[in-house]
Image (cartoon, rainbow, N blue to C red; front, side, top):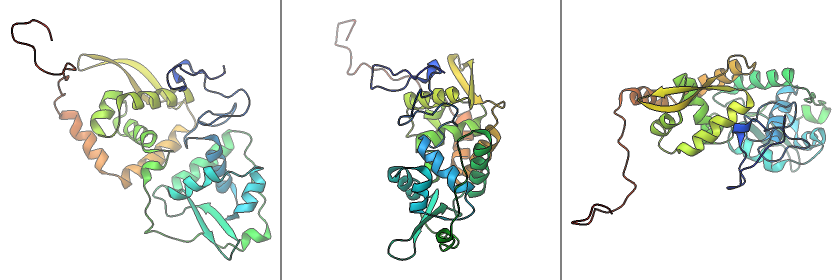
Length: 271
């Protein structure tokens, strides 16, 4: 693909041109050539998760860095904080990591990551050494607080995919009405990003006498069934959004607010 283009405002990636692949090494939220979609925000986070899924058991943290060929603490520690990866310590310097078995979508996520390793080259099964066996099984911490809205990187990315799963076909303005903290511009950028990755497809729709782009999952993509399986587990963990989505279907459309502040002056035809 062509190199990614950035807009002049905020130096954001313009995913509507489909030029999202990195020419050399990927930067930040940019996927590498021949790599999987950025469902976990960055390419290095996807690499860490796939490596842990391919491993025969928990890995020592230093062996994970040796397998990756670099230190990626800023990518690993957010995965630990958000409940995707379990980390525990045995002794002063023996730190072990593994996929968290108590995540609400632990099994679907593991199947998804193994499928990513099958479809895309570059993922190698890590060597499982004697010091890795000393870690035993990952500890079960079911009471640990896990915000599943951070499953796919951040709440905006996760909730947009969940709404597409619940709705079947999503228009950006509907996402803003269902989830209060979502903004229309952010939802639009995320939808176009997933469309550039090939997970979504769009079509021109007329809804409530308004013209818009409707986005739905592209069933031709091999990862879509696995992503929907993860989203089904998240829907089971957050049933309130399905109730809110059904209620929004029958709610009256709010009237457009007048951007002009204040009242018109007496005896004048304009503000």
